[in-house]
Image (cartoon, rainbow, N blue to C red; front, side):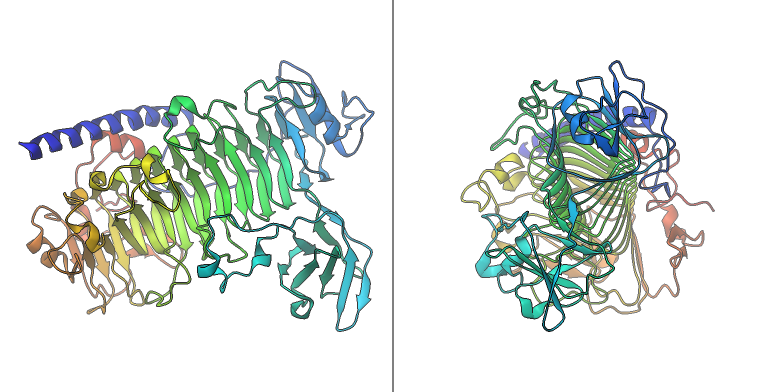
Length: 627
């Protein structure tokens, strides 16, 4: 009787989940058009010739050489960006002429439009030019610098575990560039070479190892580019509305380029209690790079990021906090954690602290060897992760590393959260393509994993005595981390890939207490290996009735023999001989028509078909195929 009640409760939660994401799907289809797999672009900023914005208020024209005492009322008499930011009111616009604006620590609390003039390219930089250098012996040069940003790791960073891998100077926020080239920080003068710099904070001296003569040397001078505050500023109260920003480049800021203030719950919080301080921000066709920590801390309901490029950051690219109904679409996220900081759990995108209905659709997440990709973490509800291309996230060619310097790096990471659709995505050369951890009700359908493990796990972590305090209380309890579905997925490994393709795990401590299996449905999946015999199993599975609470399976048939409730319509192929794809070399991961098992796909629930715009139930993996 209890099992029947439990199943009815699961089905009810599933219907509620799909009702929620179904309504969001209709909105997305009307707004943008959704594809059944990564669209192929255009990703990142799209070159525009902007018309003057149609606003209810006035337009302020600004230029790099604009004057503070100019009104900015015409293109011929531009004011400064600082003056315009101070004067604008809700419904106004700021139009920027092209060129470099060396500025920062700007504060705004009004819903305005910020965009370029016509096809010009405004660049906001957080550095100043350093042009007074004194040569020393051993090919070193020094300059006195007043605007320095010494810092320290967050309190939860464990020095006794990570101090031998990450020196403390990496947590300082200063950056130095020579002719636009990023230099790495080092800990003393003796380590400085042409690719690095050192700062003596007591003396206020910056050391470089490249002759600055005839070169442009830039050093950080501002902590933030633009901060959208929720209090009073420039004699005005906040209007509660987000800005619309288009076509602007931000680069070389000491901490972050953008911040939108708002409530950060410090405990369990319903969606009605957060995300309301600033509503409706839109950021599109912008480029943000070389922020010493994060490109943007962003808060507020109905936030949209579209066609942006976020690159060369350290701890996160974009950090979204306590916000609801957010859309990230056709963005490029690349090269996070460029300082290779350990123990900091970096991610190209972090969606954190009880965000509801955050949709990541058709984004390009590439080249993150020391970072996670997109990470939903701590109490997120009903996430939607569709049609994204994730490549090169923490990937080790061949066998898994034996050291513990780097934890697993995950393309799609869903942790301590409830309800997500992960469908139509392509994962290539990732440590873990998908990682679901201590969460419930994740539906993984029609994804393609190439040399990228799919992983679902749970452990004994709970709100009681946790290192991060209240965080686990926002997610499902230990015995509620169930309800996952894994259907119509394609998992392919080449001859060099020596890792399992599917890993469902839990430690022995949870084997008895966790109760039901974490997966509710698992079927119609296709596993392809390009080797006759692998040194590692195809599937690692927990729970199991042994000391390790884990069994290893070399084939789907062996797994099905022990678990007949799963994989009745799934297949595995060993020693395939060549690639099953149209062209791996060109990144074309459509299956060749000859892979017959790929036609054995499940009929998709109508809600999922709607979300990924799949009109026919043909084909396993992200791409439909034709006979």
